[in-house]
Image (cartoon, rainbow, N blue to C red; front, side, top):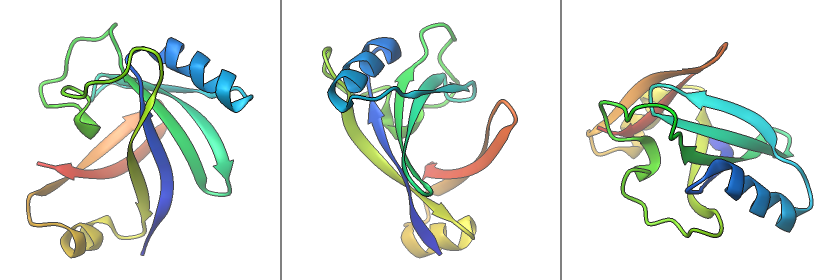
Length: 125
């Protein structure tokens, strides 16, 4: 069964986007980390039990990955002055089943990691 997990906001610059978001929300985002396989980095804000907001940006300190970055980040026209809501993510207890049920047969499942944290995510092939 798939349930909502988090909202994804994208920004051109992680520090600037976090500053804007923190000023408007009146709270501080937690340090996230780097997604080496996708060439991105993020910050996080817990919104409730099992649900959070992810602020993500292309990491300018790493070379571009061999594949397109997730969420279409390579081709987004993002505002200079603020983050933009670009996606949502669901948590699944059986990702292979849910990909078949929701997909058109062109979705791949990737094994991801950030530090000690490991997960699987689906995305268009």
